Image 1 (cartoon, rainbow, N blue to C red):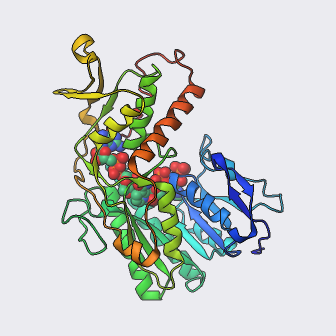
Image 2 (cartoon, rainbow, N blue to C red):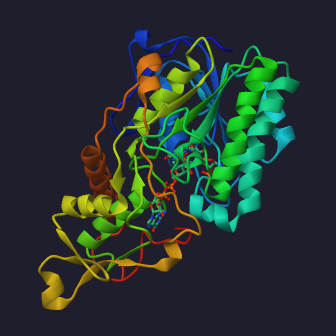
Image 3 (cartoon, helix red, strand yellow):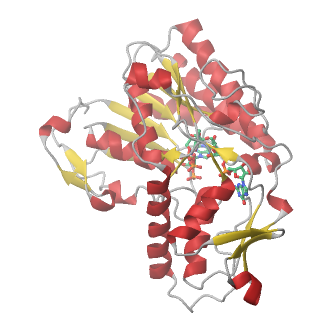
Length: 390
Ligand code: NDP
Ligand code: GDR
């Protein structure tokens, strides 16, 4: 069942296409938690293109939650199918044990998490359960099933661990200082991975990934919220964008580059912890300016927010406003990562620049909003990108 004769590659729009045999690395089996998320979808594409058999855990939902991977899915009855989905949840230990027993993965990528920092202040216990204890459950499942020497383990650790700035740029030696229930849960996960590596000799590694974005980014993370709003405003479908702290600085890369780094981490002979980052930092404010510039709008700051240049004084039109509801009880002010170790040991570096990524995201959102909601159909003033939770 682990032999794979079909090699495929990813075509435009992420479709799997027949490809040359050399794409096959081996007939390895991977399990991805969080496969329905941004990173899970790009990682599934990457692994399928390399010839892996990919199993993914998806949560039961009352509405469809597989949009990001639908283009990868093949009928499991098709003998060439190599992507298989299993219902499960990181809060359910017996379910995880059963899935690991059935799939016997060579590589496990733990990407599943309640991943929204602001939401973690509203749901701290659940976030601790899924993001912290969920990681422990997976590691214990590996141990219980005797897979410690077979299954390599990747943990989606995060630059949020650095939290309150201790040093810049941040690297693998920078002290952690978590600033949210999310970061505290991920801190537990980080250390339990290190502990299981040292205690049981497991091939378990942390990728300490700085922010990475894409057109598949969830709509309530700040970059996608901004690009969707810039597109919607340009199309006359939205009046104004409400944001919180514009002065926060982030090291933003592209998710497709970062999943390549995850895979490289698990291909090392020795498990270890690595920072993946671009080594550039930008304010939320400058991201807003870039995104609106992509739609031909030049923004000019005033005391209350951001106004469209020229129009502000003539009609007083304000396109971006501050809503204190989006400020966090404790903020992470400045992230900039030093990926030197990953460059040296993994041969990894980011390839997509910030301007390229912003352009891709805005173009995607313009196309999506044009298709989904032709201009004029949606009442002006609706906050398309301003869903609850940030
Ligand atoms: P997303 O929020 O896009 O995806 C999260 C995934 O986890 C979804 O598939 C979600 O399922 C699933 N999930 C949530 N809760 C559970 C649970 N209890 N049990 C099982 N699955 C669950 O996140 P990203 O793809 O952006 O991030 C992937 C991982 O990397 C996360 O762990 C995140 O914390 C971490 N990370 C992300 C960074 C980034 O900049 N993107 C940077 C550093 C770390 P559903 O679709 O049903 O909601
Ligand atoms: P972050 O990403 O918290 O860094 O976590 P997010 O995009 O949510 O926030 C980035 C910065 O923007 C500021 N901000 C706003 N954020 C949101 N979501 N909505 C707003 O309206 C808004 N206005 C300003 C925030 O205060 C913050 O400073 C992401 C997640 O993917 C985590 O899972 C991951 O671990 C880290 O990146 C690295």
